[in-house]
Length: 332
Length: 260
Image (cartoon, rainbow over all chains, first blue to last red; front, side):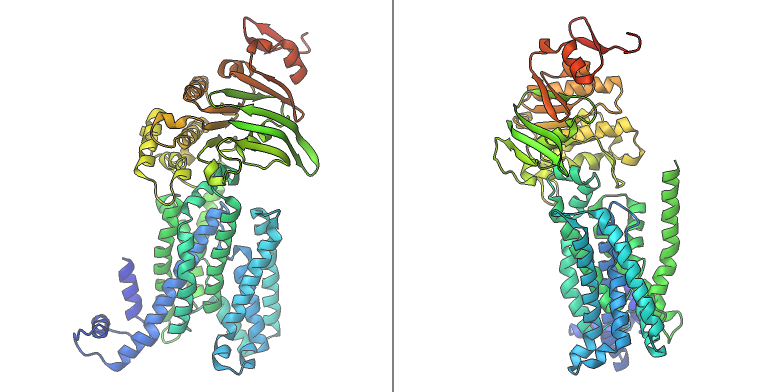
């Protein structure tokens, strides 16, 4: 199923590659000549389609496992990676960079190319650290304070972005709004490489936190009695989940609802063991994002719909469903 | 053995517990009693290492500075607050009792112990049931099974020796039959060398279950009694501030002030 979705993503797009050709191209790389493929197909496959699929896989997996980890940590199924203000902080910094034209200020070409990414990453990380510092008291991170701080920082970031939107020129406005809705459009091998180098180890760390999150579901003190060093583990989970979201946001803009919805679907279908949820969030999340991206590329081809629209369009109804479910629980 | 030395605990300069020193040995069942807000639960959590004392020490003889995960192999704690935020099954909850003993995946021995515990508590038929569907009393029994599973270093019953079990108002939500079963369980544990320390409200149950009664009032140790004959109406009146009547050898009943 997962593989079918990926292959579907590879072949469809404003330029369709025949499925047979995909295998021929891969075969050729390994020195097996199956049938000859035209150069255009080869070039689209290697320089556009493949990095884009890989970026989609990485982003989907990162956002989903970060969401799953934070939902477990906050013991709240409605928690989302954007919860502690990381995405909004990054957006505000991105809007700032776009309006001030910061990328153009750098003369070194690679710096100018990545200036926006670096700038938003700094924004995301500084908001994350600010939230953690505020919520930190006597060596312990108070989760309720962290949540409230996140709400405040989200509001602040949102209003700064709004203000900058208001001040921006038409062309900048388009850049900002495109960024706010997310896109995998700037996928290339460098981006994929950087993202993989940071996010795969970070995901590896979170993947082994199932036990910690299960113990935490009994409450922080009960987890201590089960031998979990809560203060340390909380900080690790917050740091790595936020790092994952920060890198994602800085490469693709804000892609909403993936981190919220994916872990929850798994929880609804297969129950609450966190090790299971974390692992399957990676699988389902990566598949979901590649499908969403395929839709975004094909639905109004040759133009592209921002992927954030698709994920939110699919995610919002699920979110409402979760709220209704919880309402029923509270009502009883 | 747990040695408590000049223990105090305060929150924002308000003294909750003051200057308590005592020792608790493996094989004894000590019950902590006292009025609401006396500091009973706080004392229990301090003994178990769930919270840190403001001054003084709580030392386990196995080593003075045990790390969190090492301590978890020497004692288990049944909390009063047992709500669980994830949708797990009875079996998964009992398996969490084995967390201190394995890193990523449970060993064969851990799984065997889980089976043994499920069987002992009559939970085998309910192992796949969701925790959220259990009643308060059923959940309490599964939680007892979880802390019981945490006490075993190996599948041998002898591995229970020198372990400690903390029970904070363990009979909450339990019917009379299961209350008695819990008392039987604590007796069985003490016979196998486990030190049991519990907070109870029922003086008669305490006299029935324990061989030591520790009375706390306003954060102070009022009485530490190992000879049950020393529990008198006068002592109880001093602690609870209502008159008591003694019936038979060791039954105490509070008397309504107005009627008197």
